[in-house]
Length: 178
Image 1 (tube, rainbow, N blue to C red):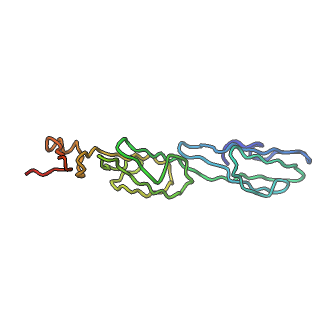
Image 2 (image 1 turned 180 degrees about the horizontal axis):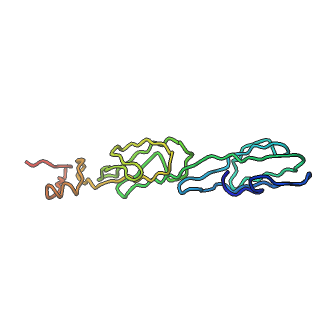
């Protein structure tokens, strides 16, 4: 179904007593952001009846043909999830990697001291620090943080633009106009 199995998919005429070495490349990225991995096989006739494949590298089965046989490779779909944070913080609860399709992810944005969370941008946009989603398609997510040196919950650039400065007293935030 995916990749280029050997022997090739379809009918092949083997003489009785022939040793068959069946293999298929795995994983296979067939569309950007989607890949398929062999999880096992099922067979009839002289082919092994079935099994799971969990070892790294390409699956390989050896058997001797003595009667009409079939071999089907079983696959799972994985999607690529890229998660990043700009320089003002980090994230927890996920990582950039391939996830089994349908995996539930709960990711939290964690601002560094002197920064505030602005939002998630990319495949999903949200102002919520905690983001719950499912890896049903490839995702690109970036947690964006803004400077907030006086820790008042207002972006420093916004304060500077509208108020002309950011006032921080030795005792902590001071946005009093008195």
